Structure formats: structure tokens, C-alpha cells
Image (cartoon, each protein chain N blue to C red):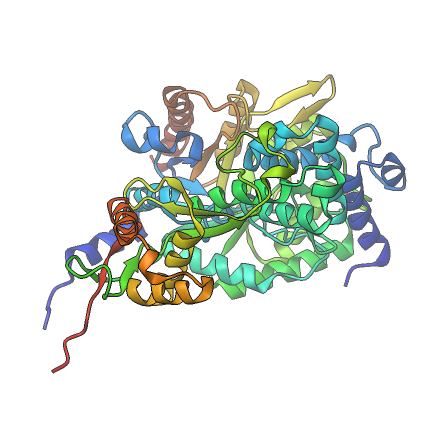
Amino acid sequence: MLKDSTYKAYSGLAKYCRTGNLDDAKKLDVRQDRIHHYRRLVFNITNGTLKQAYPITYKLLTENQWLELVNDFFQNHDAQEYRVWMMPKEFYLFAQEKNYADKFNIPFLDDLLLFEWIEIEVHTMPDEEFPVFNNEGNYWTDQLILNPEYRLLQLAFPVHTKKTLEISEKDRGNYFLLAYREIENKGVQFMNLSVLYAYILEQIEEGLSLNEIIKTFCELTNTDILNVDTNEIEGFIQKLVNKNVVFGFKKVEANY
Amino acid sequence: MIYYKPFFVIFVMMQSTMEVNGKVGIGFRREFASDFINSDVLKPGFVEFSPENWIGMGGFWKKKLDVIVENYPVVCHSLAMSIGSPDDLDMNYLRDIKQFLSDVNCQMYSFHLSFAKCDNAHLYELLPIPFTEDAIKHVANKIRIVQDFLERPIAIENSSYYTPLAPEMEEIEFVNSVMQEANCKMLLDVNNVYVNAFNHKYDAEKYISELDLERVMYIHMAGHTQVSEDTIIDTHGEPIIDPVYDLFEFAIKKLPPVPILLERDFNIPKLAELQQEVSALQTIVNKVWSLEKK
């Protein structure tokens, strides 16, 4: 059991490192001429990790805005992730929760942070066991098998297709983005999707065939199924196959 | 029925018993991962990495790590154990560590005698534990729990520090007392001894001589940066300087062969330069410990 005075020493040092407030440091039984090194070291790790994780956001914000956000995060958010490379996810959620998009009048800030985080997340996500599949099958009637290493995002701003300085409130809408990990070199690729294609991917994951997916989509959107361009959809699926986002067709177990 | 062990099992067994004592290893960094794997410029006797940098990671980096694990004896050194923290141990974290150490066939495990988490917030930097009686008991108790949970001996590293925090005793008394109370091993960071001796004006050789050296099972070596007339920061960003080599030789003359690690975390030079440092350390090691063997 720690004595109250010992606990206060711990807590005081941690608090000073998070705030950088010299009044906090003055209360500590430490070498006052050296204590600033700890604030610098601790802050630099967090700040450096976040700059590396969010290079576009860092470039977009002014230095004061960036430091305001990082300091707020560091002082007021209790980081729960023991892996420092995963900590930037908490930063994104913090900025969203504290509504920095409104505060800085950058309506697409949350989307931009999410876009940057997802690249890290997909790049580093644990390896998934690849499902077994058949190479032969029918796109429309068979269940398609996806590469499990992907994320599907819905964004309100086109942070993935436009430069940040060109994005304005007029761009607000519904944007869909596929981020997937290449199976050979493990790099991250992005693919801009229409609402239909995003829906198709989502429903493939649910185990539906293309015929079933298109039928449901038409019902949901009051679209005449005859107006659906099946060639275009097949082209999309073929593109996914070429990029190894779709592996093939579900293997049907022999039933003896 | 198979009456012989498959070759891969024999290989794995050989890996797990490969001797690292007396060998010089390298701290594995992503910055040089590809060059290291794809060339034979850097030839360490083993590789050390931090579980926290790899746990739960797949994809590109996992493939690199797998190559390392297949080809080198592995030693692990945690950054986030925060054994000195006033907070309770994080059992989920410990479970992750235990699984990871098993997955990579870790031969030796260590972490810092410091804290990096307080009031339920990770700080991601090594902060000094108050050198107090109650902190000794607190920390030693946590080390015992960790040791029991991981079912392996652990070594605690003497950390560098730039100011003591509310101290009731000297560093040497604190470190020895924690090790004795916890009955754990020690990772002797020779550069940290040099840095602390410089910063706090004590005799580095005397400090090493007064350590409970029987507990030392691993040594770290690194460079540092002098930032003012009276302050050195333990940056791991420069080559090892001669006085630290001298202190290293002084230390290992008092020890049986243990593994030695070269740490380089910043300003990472070409692999050939790292290999020069590895070779310099190995030369000292061979000289001192070969003589002892004779």
C-alpha cells in the first residue's frame, strides 16, 4: 500500500507531464531545473505519434489549432491503449466527441481523421484467416467470398478524392469508400464506391447472392429492376476479383 | 504412427535453446527492418523487440516480424509494463504479453523499473519511481505477481532519470531492495548507469560494484545526448561513446557471460555502422569472457 505522500508524488509528476503547467511542477519534490525534460519527452511522444498518424490533418490545421487539439487530448483524455501506435484512434474519437470540426469550422475534420486512421487500421489490422473458395461459379447466383481484410466507410465529405483546401460545405453528401489490404504486398488501397456498390459489398458480407442483393436494393430504393445495368455491376465485381477484394465463390460442401 | 520428430519440430526446439549468453544482439526497428532482412550486413547474435510494438499487428509488419522470429533467437523488452505505477496491474495486458512471448518463442523478458501510466492514463514515457520504502514494497509485489503470471523469470532494468522524485534513499539502495524483495533478475543498462552517474554526480563504477550483480542476466548498451553542461538525455540516438565502452568492460569483468544488446532508436545510421558497434561490443565480450573461460 502506497503512502498518500508517495501517491501524490506519482500523480503530481504525471499531471505536470500532461499539462506542462509549472505550478504543478513547483509542488513536486524534484529538481526544478530538470523537470521540464519530462514534460518535453512525454509530450513529444504523443505529439510525434499523432503527427505521423495524421499528416494531412496536421498540414491542414494551423500550428495553434494543432497544439490546442493535441494539448486538450493529452491533458483531458486518459489514454487507455497501451500500444502507442494504436493511441491515434483515441485521438480521432476525442476530436469527434469534442466537436472540433465545429470549433475549427472545418466540417470535414472528423471524416479526414477517420480516413487517415483507417489507413493505419487496415495496414496493421491482425491477419485474418482467408476463407476457402472456388474459382468457378456464377456471379449472380452464387455467394461471393471477400478478402476479409477491408473496411467500408461512409463519409459526409470527399476527403478521399479532393484536396482538403478545395473541400467546402457544398460537398456535403454521402460518400462510400472501400479500404482493403492487398494480399501479396500488404499495402493499403482505397476505392471510391457508389451507394449501390457499397450496398453490394455490405450484403455480400452478409452472405447474399448478387441476384438477392439487387432485388433488395431495388425494393429499398423503389428502382425498377429492369433499369439496373447488370453489365456495369458485373464489371465492378470483375474489378474486385482482379484486385483480390473478391476471392471467388463459396465452396459448397459435398453432401454424401 | 510417426516414430521420429518432424524436422520443423526439431528446428523449433533448436531455436528455443539457442544460446544467447555472450552474444551481442540488436534492438529491432522498423526503420531498418527491410534492409536488415534483405542483406547480411548486420549480423546480431539475437534480436530484441518490444511486444507492445507488435501485439495485434498483422499485414506488412507482421510478415517482417515472422522472418525475424524464424531466423534469430528472440528477446523481448516491454515498454508499457509500467511496473512502478501506482495503478493496478492490467491483467488483459499481461495476458496479451504472455501469449506474445509464447508466440515468438521469447528466451528472455525484461522491462523498466519505472512507470508510464498513472491515474488510469498511459503516458508512453518512462518516469521515475519515488525512491521510498513503500514504493519498494509496492513495486516488488507487482513484480512477483507478473513473474508468477508469466511463469518465467523477469529482469528489471535500471532506468535513466533526470530528477529523483520525492526520494527517501539513494537509487542504488532502491534498485537493490526492489530486486531482493521481488526476487527477480536484473537488466543492467550500462549507458543508463553512465547517464545517471553524470546527471546525479555519483561514481558509475562504484554504483555497479554495489549492485546485486548476481541478479544480472542481460545488458543493454546505447548512446546518449548531452543537452547541457550538467545534463545527459538517454536518447539512444548516438553511437556509444568510449567512456561507456570502458564502463561496459568494467561491468562485464564482474559478470558471467550474459547477452548484450545494442539499442539504437533514433538517428539510425546505415547497417554497416550498427554492425561496427555490434562488433566492437563483441570484441570486448570475447576478450573478457574468453579469458574467464580459460
